[in-house]
Length: 212
Ligand SMILES: CC(C)(COP(=O)(O)OP(=O)(O)OC[C@H]1O[C@@H](n2cnc3c(N)ncnc32)[C@H](O)[C@@H]1OP(=O)(O)O)[C@@H](O)C(=O)NCCC(=O)NCCS
Image (cartoon, rainbow, N blue to C red; front, side):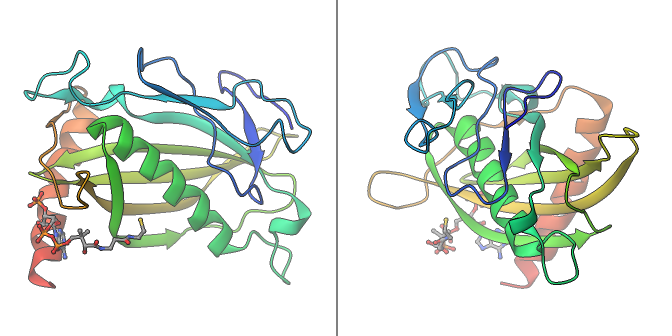
């Protein structure tokens, strides 16, 4: 299991546990250790902090950067491949659903459920040995729901050539202790890119709501 560049850890897509996160942005909260140690692997970096609501955050807003995952890497192993020798799409969806859920939890400080996934595009095939670089962040929040944008890039470790692999939008709803949707803190876009995503997310939501 190789650690690359600024990223906290890397995983096989076959791992059943949640993916590790860099803990750089979340100062306090529950500490989760995953099952790496039990699997006989190094647990280095295999943890994340999820900041509960009300610990240093106000209801006014939280910046996109506070919950975003910028550069989570995952290596493609032989058992991640379909019979054509390319990455199995379902495996990748499992990974990105986990990542998006972690972003949703970090943002809201709540248990979050996936309400929907849309605009899923498998843009290029990934192959054995590719390093996948995953990015996920909150595009926009509403009262109890939020849109998380996910993007995956594959990097050829020999040439460092990159290609887009996947993009998708996840809608998550934050839940209270009685499994009812609960109000969440607003997200604050800071960069011009984040502002553009924020604006575009509203249009997508309107479209989704017409399909209810
Ligand atoms: C998520 C769930 C609680 C929503 O239930 P619901 O009865 O639609 O609840 P609400 O009407 O209060 O809607 C909750 C939020 O979802 C939003 N929503 C509902 N349908 C939507 C749609 N089609 N598109 C976008 N947003 C939608 C609502 O607008 C609301 O968000 P807001 O408060 O920010 O406006 C419910 O559908 C559920 O439990 N689904 C199963 C989730 C699950 O098991 N996921 C897989 C495993 S994690």
